[in-house]
Length: 207
Image 1 (spheres, rainbow, N blue to C red):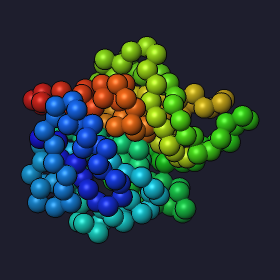
Image 2 (spheres, rainbow, N blue to C red):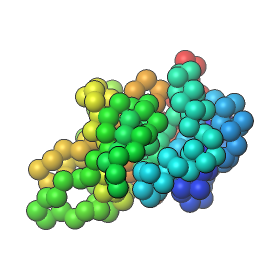
Image 3 (cartoon, rainbow, N blue to C red):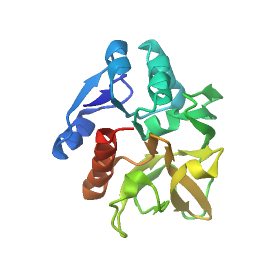
Image 4 (tube, one colour):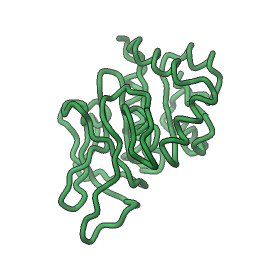
């Protein structure tokens, strides 16, 4: 069972539909008790970092999420959900994150010929051993809508890179059984479903 955190910071309908398409058993909740009991978590989100953390605090979910990760149970953050895994963000001030992936969320740097926010289909370069991209075809593209990215404190936590003009940005993370995708897998057609299916398989694998 993949427990999808519905903290009010994302329209989770498309996420639930995508999980259904890959045959994953999933339920949406904002109940602390259900998050505490979960074997695996998926944290979606859209919007600003500060609002996302405020929503998690409002539903008393910050410590259960941290405890879940500390227990070695799998968690996947997507879009804003990936950013919330980081230690802190500079978006509209400085905000403390879940601190599951040491690092800082910062704004994409302006590049000639590239728009911010970055909206649309982009390829990425996956780390060779990245679990989420084990079945990714070479020409896979994913759908992005973002202005901010995570700078990982440890290079080995970066699992996928996006070439954005002259800069290289981390758009996927992996640290133990903690995973993040800056793109929207639920909107990325077959490539996105492959990523979600990889996470499903991880959830079904004993520690």
